Length: 147
Image (cartoon, rainbow, N blue to C red; front, side):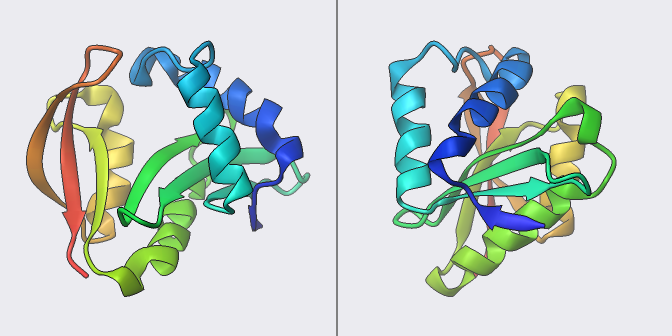
């Protein structure tokens, strides 16, 4: 089940962020990241997907003003269950009426990013421009889905 995140989901989001820091860069000790999580939750711009036991398995965050997917991660133990795909589809539904949708993700060169890229590609996102290295020193691109 996909649902809007609530303030009580903050700690779970921090735990998920800690798990993916090697690919995204330092987050959990960043006040800017912590404040960003709180703002996304407060503005109802963050969605989580629960597994069959009601555990939060993945999260997607949006910026409705910029029509952008800000953050997507699925916990390691929950990968392979189509959760990322379902979260991206939900994000598209939330954003599609506002035109083109952007997301920063891993470049084609990054083996660890192939799953995320595949999700975006299956949902009609195309590479738009290089975006340099993220805070983990990994090459990224901006992908665009025409509205």
